[in-house]
Each structure stands twice: as C-alpha cells, then as structure tokens.
Length: 251
Image (cartoon, rainbow, N blue to C red; front, side, top):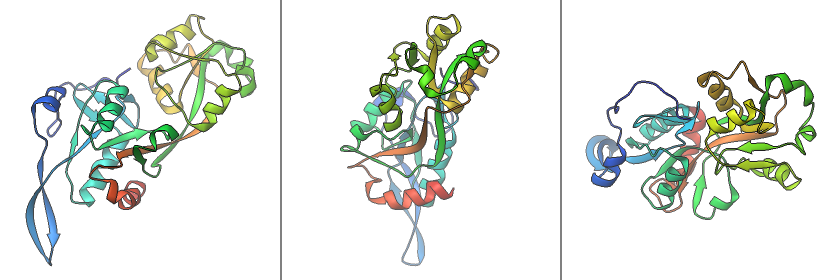
C-alpha cells in the first residue's frame, strides 16, 4: 500500500521513464588544495521500499521518508548529489540495485543471502515485528507461542531477519501472497488469524485504510528489526561505507 499525498514529480526526481531514457548526472562542489573547484560527478541513484512508512514510500514518482532524508544529508556531506528513483515495487528496487541501475537503497532489513553481493550500512532506526489481529481477539494472545497453530499472512517477499526465520523454522505459519491491504482484509473477515508487519508501518496502514477500529497489533513484539541502507559491493559508495555509517547515524 503506497502512501498517498501530493501528485507530480518533485524537482530532481527521476521517473521510471527517465530510468530507461535518461543519463543520470549532476554537478557537485568539491574542496581541494585549499580552494573550491567545480567538478562534474555522477549523482548517486537512490531507491527504497515504495510502501514502508516512515522509512521510505512513494507518492507517484516521488520518493520520501526518513531514509531518503538521511541519505540526502549524508551524501551532501560527502559532496555527492542524490537522484531519487521510484520503482513501484520493492522487488524491482532490489533488482535495480543488483543490476547496477541504482547505487543505494535507503530502507532494508539485514538478510544474510544478500551479503555476498551487497553491503549493509549501520542501522539508522530500530523497530519491531508485530502480529496484527482483530481488535476483539487481542486478549486471546498473551505470548508469541499463542500464534503457533494459527493461520498467519505476511507480505510477499518479506524477510524479517534471523529471529523471525527461527520462529518460522519452529512452525510459525506465514503465507506470503497478495497485497498488504488484501492480507489485512483477510484478517478483518476471519480468513486469516494474524498479519505480520513491521510495527510502525502497520500502524500507519491501519490509519490509512481506516482499519484502526477493527484491527490492532499485539502488545508484544515477535522480533526486533534494525533499518539499514543497502549498497552494491562494486558501486560508487563501497569505499565510503565507514563514512556513510558515521553520517547516517549522526544526522
């Protein structure tokens, strides 16, 4: 579910058509030899999850969120311009990073399978994974163990880290299919018992979809998560990971 807002393309934002038809580039100011000199340097192409409030989301062809703001600020300190890209789906954004069409993703969870091709930054925010259930059923669940044997759903392609992987290995039932809105509606109408989402994004979705009166998160977390940025091992930021880590955790 993509957050809604002002339509149109923001200044400096590259549309999906621009990805195919344009060459990305911008001017940056560099300080060298005790004096300032202008030099042309390619803009850093950034993307993110299109529907993960408050870390990143898309409004039309505009990429917004905490991760976008932190990436812009950090790149600015490094003398680099940022060129945000909109992909419409997380899988497309991830594939774009793998194939060199984007240099940095501003919102990602650590996944061991990606570390042979990509580099993770230090975390810039903390959140947790929650099960969202019918509000009338909240009292039935007192601990994570109470979810076992129930029918759960999670976003297609979602990976919530080692702690959640361990719960699934122990038998936590999570079906991954359909849209996030569709999954929440399945819980609403009793076709699934719970939906697993990152907490802050889940609360935002309930408000956006006007489901806060019918669904609610359980009062305990299933797993902690840390929100990071993701870059290519062979990309323009690979040699600046340490500096990037310092900047995104300080800004």
